[in-house]
Amino acid sequence: MKSPVIVWLRQELRLKDHPALAAAGANGRPVILCFIRNTATDRPWLPGAASCWWLHHSLREISQKVQNAGGKIVLRSGNPAEEITSIAIESGASAVYWTNAIEPSDRKDELLLRAELEKNAIGSEGFEGNLLFDPAEIKSQSGTPFRVFTPFWKNCLKAQASMRAVQQSSMPVFSQTALESESLDSWNLLPERPNWGKQFDSVWQPGEDGGQAALSNFVHRAPDYEQDRNYPAKDNTSRLSPYLHFGNISAAQAFAATNQQNLTSEGALSFQRELGWREFCAHLLFHFPQMPEKSFRPEFSKFPWIEDDNALADWQKGCTGFPIVDAGMRQLWQTGWMHNRVRMVAASVLVKHLLVHWKHGQQWFWDTLVDADLASNSAGWQWVAGCGADAAPYFRVFNPVLQGQKFDPDGDYIKQWVPELMDLPKKYLHTPWLAPAEVLKDANLEIGKDYPAPLIQPDAGRKRALDALAQLKKL
DNA sequence: TTTTGAGTTGTTCGA
DNA sequence: GTCGAACAACTCAAA
Image (cartoon, rainbow, N blue to C red; front, side, top):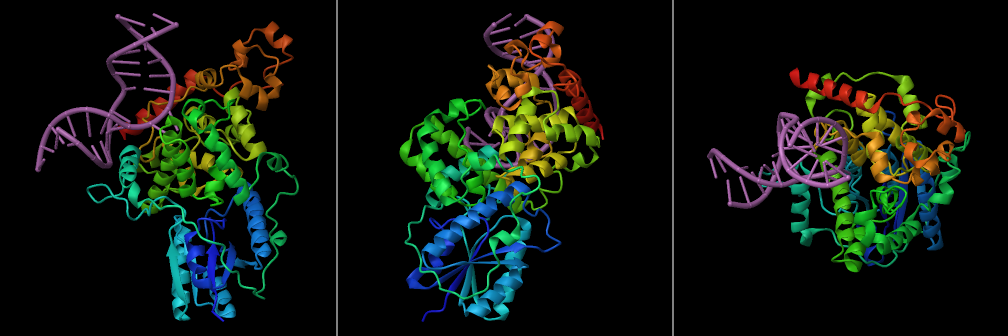
């Protein structure tokens, strides 16, 4: 009887195109899958509430699949190094395999586990699988990590030959283990009181099957992606982000799928560029592990942020008085996701018009997004705030009214998520506070009662942000 | 080696 | 109404 190999799952909750799993199951070796709910108290960035929802359903799906194949997933809570070593000893495993992670605390866990396993003469190996490229391999000509996206992605495309390819492998043999496992339900990953996730079920199908379905659905829409992706009402983004974050599908699968079908389509190339941004953010976090905590540009530690709990709460609830922002924030709360264009506008309003520290926005998105990803979320917020790598120039301040008029010209998106504005004529949909009294009356709307007045006038907010940034330059 | 040009997602102003 | 320029500072690659 061959001794089993353990595969430690984290953010690669799939069975196909899984290099660590394929290697573990090679030559008919029995495989034990395990997932450790990390309860180490010194660990920052434990999964947020929406992430927990997705995690629950992904784990349930994969564990069902493994069960159907005659095995089971071992679920444990605690410190990964200790738990996995003890699982390995209990099961007589010859080795533990995993997929290399990017998050600093995950990488620390890998080192600790490797050391623990070595002490017990158990093998260990980390595999690629989450990204298209190994972030340690990509360097500019001067040998340093890239800090600008375009040269980074050019470099990646030039090196396409060394991009990780999709791996076809048959289902491994799963060990019929008697190892103890906690029950998924006992982890209480789903919301209860209140059950804010009740709309999630109708919007998402977490897991590998849902990911494959979303990918093939997107491939048909990809030709129009370039044109339509900026219009939230058209809803022609890929919606693959949570599947990619949890590894329900791999980035390599997504890249390959859009390559086959639409080799020459602008839309496919533009989508692959977005995969490139995911890759770039991971690259940044890998090389600059402080990114989630500290501004990339050190001078921003002196930025005159305003601690304004009321403004923050209004922003979180979708009550800023800017319809496009409020629509986005409510879409986020109700579905765990927000359209990319609207994310930029909502984020810009928080950090520029309201001068609230980007960390508060980062934290809220972390808790509410089903696709919350430490690398992308942190890099994105720093980009909007202007303190990140390859960040927006300081003078680039989104005007929430103009953005709404440009990208939701008929107000369909706004009306979907801010129904109290339903009867307002198109002319005032983006500026309800400017509507004449009789128009408001006809629309059954009282500003300040049915819908808030804007927290700050767009031009005043813009000026205040530019002044704050100018002040920073003088220091 | 040094210089030069270009760089995800914008807005405003003045011609 | 449309269009180009201006709005920094810095990274990277190519000339």
